[in-house]
Picture 1 (cartoon, helix red, strand yellow):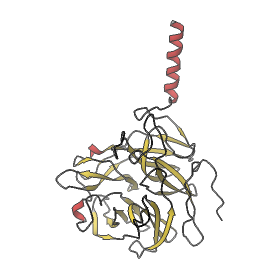
Picture 2 (spheres, one colour):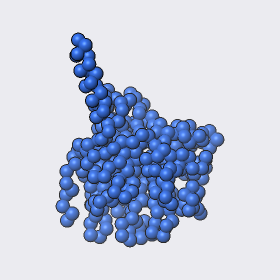
Picture 3 (cartoon, one colour):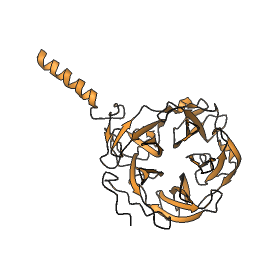
Picture 4 (tube, helix red, strand yellow):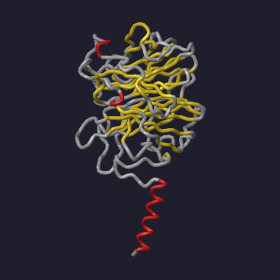
Length: 341
């Protein structure tokens, strides 16, 4: 009996060292996550993916769905994962909790991190406290892409009162940040309307006016990137006359000042999920688009509106710079990309 107990204890130590299978959202992260297709991470619910390439590493920032039962959203902190090859991923400690923004009261919603001036700036949507009701965008800073991040201002960068002609109190969400070739960084965000503004060099203040650049069927989740001389605004879209779930559409421009040309849908809705949220990166010469769906089950909790899971697909371009349609798959990037032509 004593020998069997010792053997069991030894086995438990080995399992703990290598990461035992997760059975619920409270389980510890695995030391290494192997890409088995979509969803990417299967021991917890993740959403709103935002990639950042730093040298030979791609970092993926996500929200963390923790809703139980029929609850819609319960998001309290933000996570980050890293990879050097898109085949294995390392989970890191949560980079920030919504409570770290002392002026916010809940909702660790969509975010994006950007590198500038030797630091990493994290922009995130939260619910402001009652002093400035509505959704707001905060900015935090860190010396490392894996954090921890701390509030860079002690107050919101963008509040609902700064966009007073908007349609509702949750329009100031889903920030995307992009530094142009001239070194100027821009921020875009919104729900139902898409806003854009310049950031000052300190990355913590708006520089100049806030403008609308709302493309057709814009719903939320904008993402800015550039390839060659062409700017891309990719976003969660919803044709309210014909659709019940968000798709992904995009527009292009030769200047961030516009005009923006609508290019149509990039991909259809996410399985089992009303929402979808694009994040785009080029890594080791290959384009990728990160999304989320609601196909994952963790323990006794199945996928739902408030329990989503991050996915990834290859992103390819046509010779004229337009994007090839993306088909969402279970294999994702665990298989080689399709031919480029």
